[in-house]
Image 1 (cartoon, helix red, strand yellow):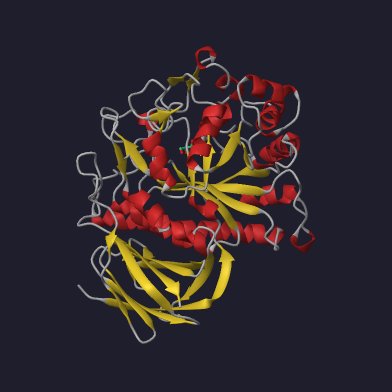
Image 2 (tube, rainbow, N blue to C red):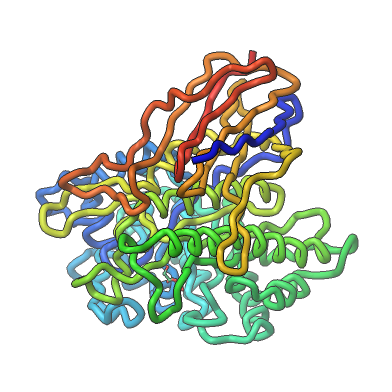
Length: 509
Ligand code: AHR
């Protein structure tokens, strides 16, 4: 093993753009065991709950300072009719969840339950409305039901269902993946629909909507361009229209094919590096969509929202293929830490990101055992927790005069060290990932424009990249104190073991 020394300069006194806390957002769809059995167990469950919502899940997520939760989909959003999910539960009509497992959806978790969940979490709701199979009136009524005060038909209905005061709901999605499950529309068709839906989703009283148009898949830059044109103008003459404040994009890390995406826990080092190359692509994609947006909106008034991201593996053997249930290893954690460094660097345009999905589905924070109900925190959960100090902090740029080490992966090159830093309330947080599975790295942090005191450090790593947590052994991959941070004449020297994620925190002297 060779140590790779990497010089890195951070000007502690030059704060950059603010990293929105919403880059640490979440996503919960009516899919598999995310809502039912994940968040919601029903009031009669033996598992401690409030109105059917699992309290242990809430407590674990509160520790992440989860800023927002997107719901009810995903693909499910464009078949969801919100009025089926209000009123007495035993009278709510059922439906078939055709996208996800062809199972019956009893609508027991609906608008009121979702808003109660957000209140318990202390998170802002982000509701995805139904453009694909819904009507403009249906969506407009939903906004009125949730956010209007005083007296109106929807307000009376809300009050009849037990909620006197309106809620605050800022984030509103105009459909989901309109190019696919959301209606198989062309960009032009969708743009026209989004204009219509966006127009009739009204700001009621003080509740100002932040409308998010359903954006591109991966590198479909033409989709982004069409939406930006529809928002109005070009370059400096650009005046974003009132009916859309942001547009989204989706990108999943899938090193295999859609038919065989690879296994969550059974993989070799080659598969691991190919995964990291795919994960690193998120930088290229955000850069590409931002560049298109910059042509139309150089003032960066329109937000870019990556409202679905994360790893997508083959489902766990023996589980319903439509439930997208997968394990989560140290590899997933490093995918997450790499994404956050990229998100931070794009803080000026990227205003929100939502990992898919919070509980039991895809790259989850929490897995619940269907038999015992036991709750497991995944390695990805720990990255969110270790990084939470970046929320609403000012980005600190990291200059790398000698670059970073990289390694060949098929025909690509993977930079194997990734970092980002921020400051907030007199504290500095530095995140460092060594993606290399064979070489350690030493980072020589040259801290200029200030100094750090009360330095502490934590590390997330394990003996194998395949290591993961289970109900039987829940703490295999968990953060520990990291002893290998030394003060130097110009700053700090941080040792990064192979495949590790490290955070260093300190107070500005
Ligand atoms: O997150 C799972 C699915 O992936 C979502 O429902 C859809 O939007 C995307 O294709």
